[in-house]
Length: 470
Ligand code: MTE
Ligand code: MO
Image (cartoon, rainbow, N blue to C red; front, side, top):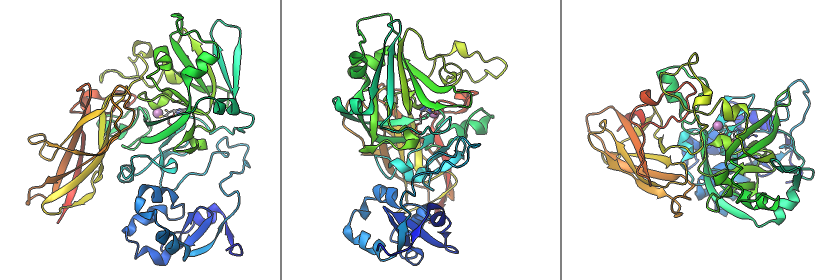
């Protein structure tokens, strides 16, 4: 095998159709699977990896965990991935994004610089844990380059003239904890609000969300080590700053309330692993904050500094963004000082299979509907209701995957599915879904009445129309 040719990621990416030939990678192998595609038991699904790595899909579809599958793939080997192919080259000094990492082709960008991308929703619900390469990315700035050997985390407690510095090694020597938590962007499902009236923000579909295991040290432990007195009532917030910055040197920042940071049940982590491996660059390498139950924006990546303070972060993203408003507030009347920063997110669900305006097969008079549901603040999903007739008849979905942690520490999403009978005469149908959480909070019926100028908190009943195939 070592005498096979060597290919770069760009050469592989150029082989992504029947015309060019279909190449994929697995670990360091390069494979020409053009001939195999026709006979793939999973059908055309495999084309989503064309020109890219099949590895994350083998995680999604567990059926591949079989030596026989690997043998089949190996028979199509044509070469090897160029050593260091995954390392980028910083060549273009005029482009601050030239050092950004390579991304998987299946992530569909809403914006490239900065990089923001989500997975097609039908893939999202194939696995309880979202593979790292397929986890949505929401960057406001270029991805910083951090050498883990020189990494430093500064901790300051306001009013004490002392800054404590932790290296990555020091963090790794502290007790390690692992949690499973869903992270969701406040703008998830914004595209439905955009249809009502334009909003400011990226056009996210329903996949700006993912679920992963995160390992690291408790923020609480680190703060206490740094000399924080937890009985001191003066402090109200914990501020975070990332190593990512704009041309003026301004860094990304956010804060969370102090009770969340200090609460033993809060599970706030300074994480250095995602799904058992070092956090990938796009998701905050080498250390990010994981604030389970709380909006994505506070889960600061590339963590550089922590400040325990009387005040919230004064960053743009804490003060003038990621806040909710009444539907009639517009850009002339909006006053950002009047709304609190979003922290815990409300209950949400989404239909992922079938997809909006797609086609679904009727089998034995029924269609299968699949999706996710999740609620912020550690609430657990207790029910998902689905209707095909505008709410005249509701069907209760079954949970395909839910972890057993009780509220208020239930950080993961719930994957659900249901088979529902359809009227034999119908050619298309509108599917609605809504979830109920352990506080018996449920989703609002209409997106119109929760519309807001930033397009955040878009958690109305998910309503999609699909065509029926018999
Ligand atoms: N942290 C830093 N340093 N810079 C950022 O741009 N984006 C935030 C948050 N943390 C961001 C950040 C937002 S808005 C979201 S939704 C999540 O990271 C996205 O995390 P992900 O890219 O790992 O999915
Ligand atoms: Mo976000």
